[in-house]
Length: 72
Ligand SMILES: [Zn+2]
Image 1 (cartoon, helix red, strand yellow):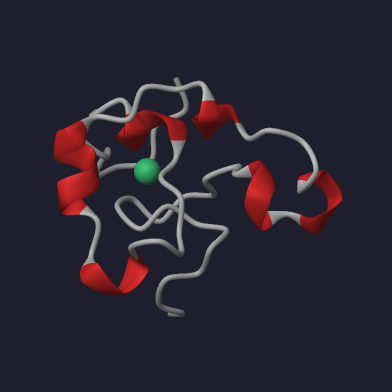
Image 2 (tube, rainbow, N blue to C red; image 1 turned 90 degrees about the vertical axis):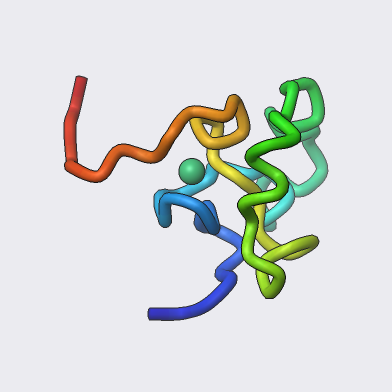
């Protein structure tokens, strides 16, 4: 386990698809620039990951991370 990897969501551990974390797309605005981030989700980010790791789109919306792997 790596802690606060900027490529992964600190809440659910899935790739956050943040444009800023990927050198290839760093020049382009990330989806999170225009997304509404739930205040509740921000508060759940571990201290160590704050300012380093982006949330994934689901967690940013305030969705509860799934505990099981479901493709659907
Ligand atoms: Zn997430």
